[in-house]
Length: 336
Image (cartoon, rainbow, N blue to C red; front, top):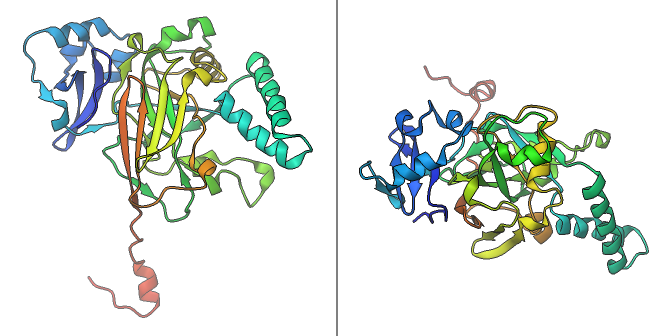
């Protein structure tokens, strides 16, 4: 049974035959939404000027083809054209990372290293800018899709994150204006292949976020899009359990750059479009910290306060099919 969100209404997308329908969630039930119900031609068009009161009234009205939420298969609740990701954005997590490095490479005690790192982070928050990179919308899937672990690495890692869903287009907006451009929030698990993060062939090039974060299904998203009016994005508990063991346990009140700063910062370069998602960073407790990476059969249960629960199951990648040309070169027989 899918745990419903806390808000009076939310949006979800669910599978219907070979297609996907947009649905309205209220409590433990869901009903399809058509263009007339939305007052818009589609999801992103609705998000460009969301009328949540319209959907609250629809949920309270009689009629509608309501179904139990547990009887449908939910998939990713968004259709982003752009995915923007913020890195190194949980203050305490970054302090611990910096302090660990300083402890190993200097004569500072752990306490001195943490104090020094905290000073650096506070100065960055006051005078610096968020760190962004981009993801591929094609990597966005629902938790109904198993996470296939590519065979080219054994270091696939989890990073649970709060994701902002953009509403009205945002281009070069101020921090004060930023919240006017947020339609809602959802859950994303930003899967990362750790041994591909840094280039080995030429270390001067630096990070390679394309290869390390954008394999098929590496952005499990949802299951709900919860309206912004019902969410205090600046103070949300988030946890990730691996096979029932707590791995991540954080709160968005530890964000180095808050949500308004992130939306404003990301909008300075490229317009953020309705339906785009902006990932806000991940707290401590990923696989790199635990020295334990994802394996076949693992189950990740991610939860963000008020946004529901996401369950991602890991499977091994199937071996590649035999190469017909290689078989022929080795003396095999072709079949017509």
